[in-house]
Image (tube, rainbow, N blue to C red; front, side, top):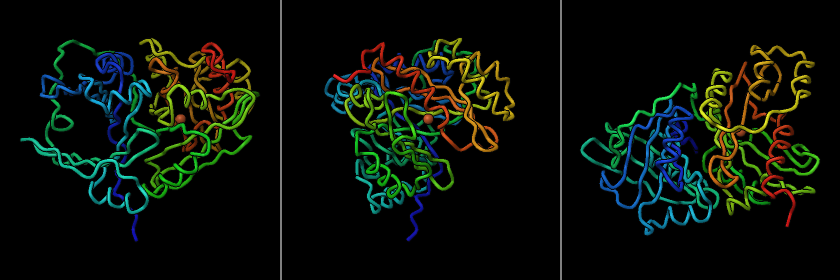
Length: 371
Ligand code: FE2
C-alpha cells in the first residue's frame, strides 16, 4: 500500500499567545514579516483574533482570545503560555492525506472540513501532536482571498516596514517531550506522516558536565519535512529540556528553525532590530574551528563578532544561531540557520557550546538545580 500523503511542504504555523497584536507587530518589526491578513471582531469573529503574516515562503498565524469563552485558547495559554498550537503541511488532497495518516496510526483531532466564502474554499483536517498541539493537512488551491475565509486585509494602517532580514523558509520544527515519550512520538510521526528516522543521539552523545538529553530526528524522504524530538536524560542538574517541560507544563514545540542564505546580514539586521540571541561562544570555540582547516566561505571574524555558531559535517557546514525565548516563559524560541555545501545536520557539534550557554541563563532563572 502506498503511504504517500501528497505533502508539498510546510504550510502555516499558528501560535496561541497572550496578545496577538503585540506578537504580530514584534515579528513585523524584528523579523521583517509582513502582516497580510487579519481576523477578529471587524471580520465577524468575536471570539478570536488572528494576524496572518508572510515572509518569503513562511506563513505564520498569531492568535489570541477575545472572550474567555474561547476555551481552546484560554486553556492553552493558561497551561503553556505563548506557544505553537499547530503546524501544517500543504497537501494535494486533504481527505486522502488525513485518511492515510489515520490508517497509519494518526490520532484524529479534526476531520476534513471545507471553509468557504464567495472567494472560494480551503480544506483542512488535523491529527493530534504532543499534549495540546496539532499537525494540520491544508489545501488552499481553490481560494482567491487572503489566507482563508474569515481573513480580511489588516485594519491598522500603520507602517511597520523594516530592513529586510532575508529570512526564507521553515527548515525544521522541534518538539520537547517528557521522559520515555520520545520513541512514542518518533514512531507516531514516522508511521502517520510516512517519515523516517534520520539521526539518533543516545545517552552520552549530547551532554554537558551537568545535564543531558536524548534526541532523534525524523524527516520525509524528500527532506522537506524535518522534525527533531528531544527528551531529557538523567544528569546532575536540570537539563534545558526538563526546564522546558516544567515551564511549558508538558510536551510541546521547542523551536522553529528558519533558513537564510546570508546569515551575516540576517543576524546583524535582527540584532539591530532588537532580537536577543543566546550568548556568544568563547574565543576558543572559533580558534578550534580555524584549527580544523575546513574551508568556510564566510569570514570567521565576522561570524565571531555576531556570535554565529559553525558546525562542520563532511564537505558541508552549517551556520546557526538561536534566539533567547520569545515569550515570557523560558520555552519557545527561534533558530536561524544557513546550510552550506549540502549540510543536512542540525548543529550536533554545537550542542555543547549551545547548552552551556542555555545553562548560564537557567542559573539566572533559578532553574538549574532540582527542587
Ligand atoms: Fe534546530
